[in-house]
Image (cartoon, rainbow, N blue to C red; front, side, top):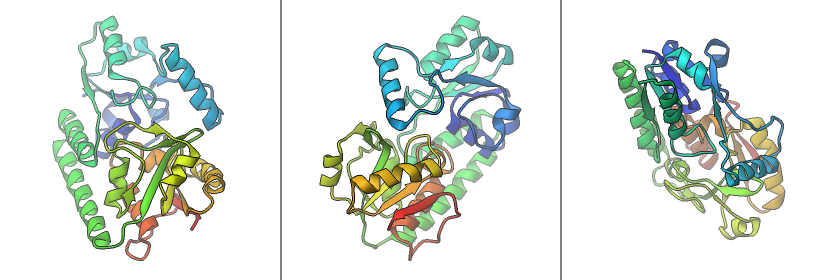
Length: 295
């Protein structure tokens, strides 16, 4: 099967279930497994210039959305030439990835009959179900089922480790300029890690806030998990948060890999958060996942 992944999480899922060699197209954001963009044609890009600050990105996104301009550009002719049988995309967030409606329009223009699978999870169980569906649709059912079984075992191990322990109040910031409270599956990640999420909406969209309102939530810990950013950038933004919320411990996490991307590594993210909340009960994760900016 020829698979076009127009969503970084879908690319990660395809690779995890053994379908990486079936990928014929990816996006500019697909970075896992490493080197995938060097091996597979990129058919989705962004009009936003590189090097913008978080505040500048927010302003640019708001401007484009207000003018009805797309956040992503698909190279429809290239996608047509690659002739995928299955296209993996999403409708969860117009800012995060190319929407399924844009893909359908491109396919109609090309006269393509490729199957489109939209991956739109709102919970960890939804993510596991998406892994199963991608594997089954792509002809890797056994591998997908085995992977989901392993991930469920790891989730159960975390649950056992944090059971009965005090649950710190945790505020997760998905953006810092302006501050955004994380929604969708992120509050669930906190609960599974042994914390009590404050501010964010389960299965809902991320929402803007003010620094005064964030302090009013009285969190025991702030997790800085800027959408699409790795650990280095998260640490840099966490230092600013540390100054704005001076009385609260602050942790930075590689959000792009372990928090906002709805793939198998969400379980790694839960394990990392569990260690940040309960370091005496959970094994410290490998370097490069989470850092205490102020303990």
